Length: 125
Image (cartoon, rainbow, N blue to C red; front, top):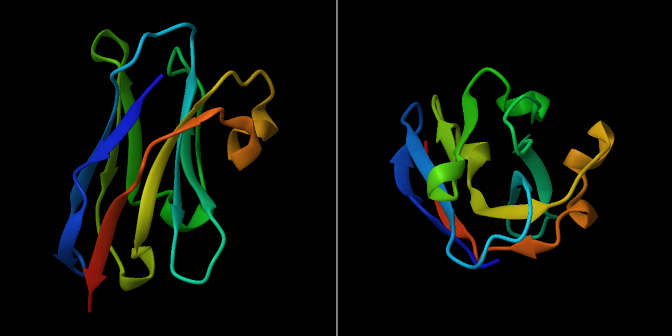
């Protein structure tokens, strides 16, 4: 599994970005995918996650009404549509892949085996 994020950039508050995460490696299994973010001086935090089939989706409360996670398994890609962006959304965004069977584990960084290099999202006020 080799994950690569793209789509980050600089945007004004209220704007939108769409992040993509492509798995370019050999696909061994049915991975759940998650988006996490890390701001300077802070720990990596959960943003959103989606099961392999897409029937389970989770968000952290601060993005629930603004972000949308989706996936296209034929293209080995997961997306994060981010709307109404705020300066506090500024961070490096990472996607992760893992085999997750329990709902509570979707929000944990240690549930994900593989990570991309991250893409910077900067929201100006």
